[in-house]
Length: 94
Image (tube, rainbow, N blue to C red; front, side):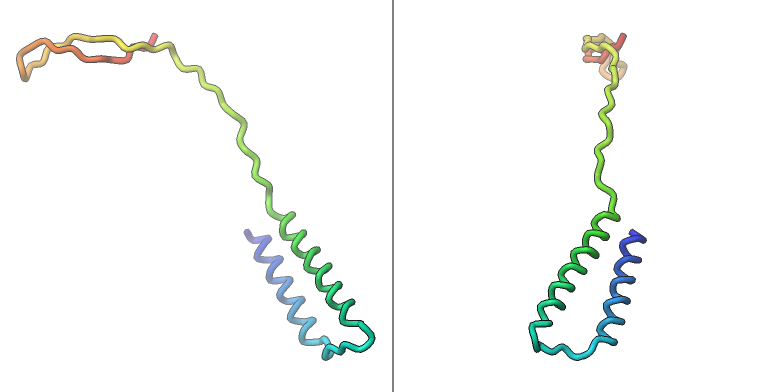
């Protein structure tokens, strides 16, 4: 993020200094087209530099975990509150 902010500040500083020093634009002789083309090329170069500074997303490698062999079994237990035998399903892993 710091790189992006630094690049943007540098670009704004350069653009501000060029605007302050640049003479008034005149359309004589078709020289305005050279200015437009230069601006487009400069913008493409600056945009490419900003885009290249950001890291590309890389998905993490898949991780396979071996889980133990488990099964569901019924278990009888004494319920002291009700005073009866009850059963419940529990997971049994070997």
